[in-house]
View 1 (tube, rainbow, N blue to C red):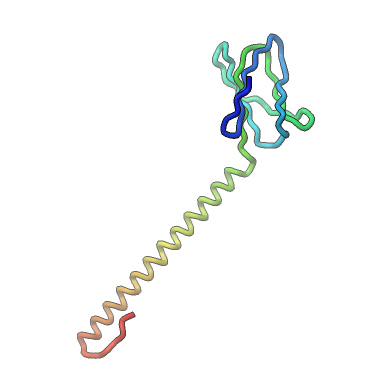
View 2 (cartoon, rainbow, N blue to C red):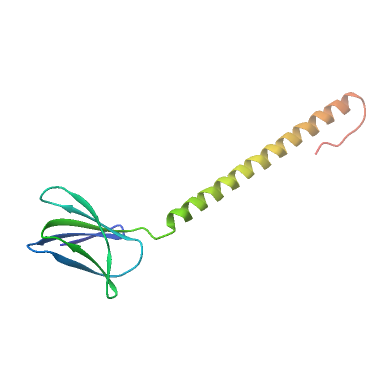
Length: 124
């Protein structure tokens, strides 16, 4: 039996001897398989192998639930780099806004001190 979910796949396998489970999905780096032995509850990560153009995993005899999932190589680094970039932009925006506010306050304070002295000044 096969259940597709969130881009992955869950298969239930019952075998009385060791088997190779092939999946009609193009082989690519980043696929992972976790097996759950339904008899004793043991979990194991299985190596995904190339079987021609498709994927395969080897299972010993028994009853298993195997879950195929995909995490592309480099995705973690890409997410981290993007997060750092967004953080840098936010910090830069906060610094620019704070600098402009300080500048306006300083100009207003200078203008008020000049108005008290009787000189005319234009306030931006």
